[in-house]
Length: 96
Image (tube, helix red, strand yellow):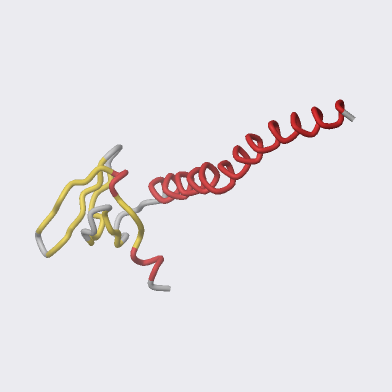
């Protein structure tokens, strides 16, 4: 009888930390990993003429793509240079 009580207590001590790790993986780590993969795919598929929005909320059209930067036209004749990673999403994909 004493052996069964100690086994149940040891099982509970192992079960809860493992359950917390599993929950953290599925609710924190995995969604963040999927978001990073989606953002990486978005950055690699950028092309001239895409309508995009920056992380700061600035809307513009891509005029020039370089290795780490993108030049956006935000108004007629107004060109701004941004880091590629500061682009949030493509406007043309949200209007479908």
